Image 1 (cartoon, rainbow, N blue to C red):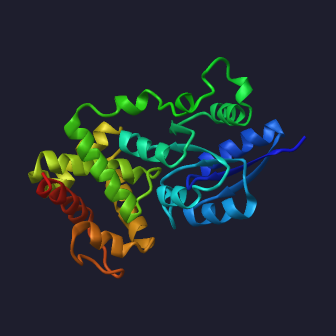
Image 2: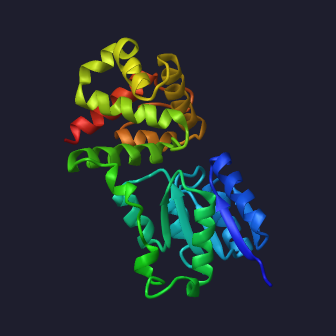
Image 3: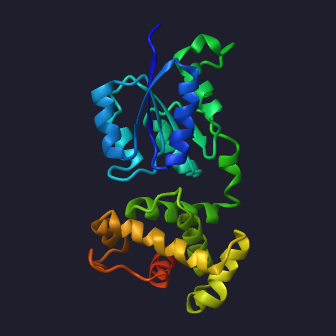
Length: 263
């Protein structure tokens, strides 16, 4: 019996290892793991996998760019990601994704989806259709309370993807929360240590110092990835070079101001 060849692409080593271990327990899979979008595209055409399980937040080449390049592959694609926006879901589905699963998702559930894709007869009735496979978990729609916040969060997420801030690091959530606070109350940027950090720390049950360090790390990750051209493009002018990076407050203010200027 031929084994199912599964290609896993995820920057989160814990998620990747957990799924790899689960599939190894089954014994019916050949598993290939990569950590960025460039490796993903290369391995797809080199290894010709049956199934691709991937995040869309990837370095080197982001997940959506990778999906566009591998569009002609015969592999079935499962996306597992923290991005819950309907816009991203729709874009992924338009690029041929079979399942869009919101992290955290159990390895056993992913294994079940792989089995369904490889053995459509296991799915009863008429549910083995594209419409059934393109199901978005209900949590994806619960995360946005209204049209305005949905638009703002989509814009912020787009900026983070463009500049290379991965969704799985703690600073991603803290930085997004800080930007939302600065949009709602621009004066908070003048009271970062006394108001902004403590408020975020309280919401996420952590400390102000950990919030400050996590946000600084998120910004450093973007700069270390060298996407300076993307960063300058986002803000519409040459703001920074590769040898300089903004402080936490400067970056939060830049993104918040951009949101406010765009209405």
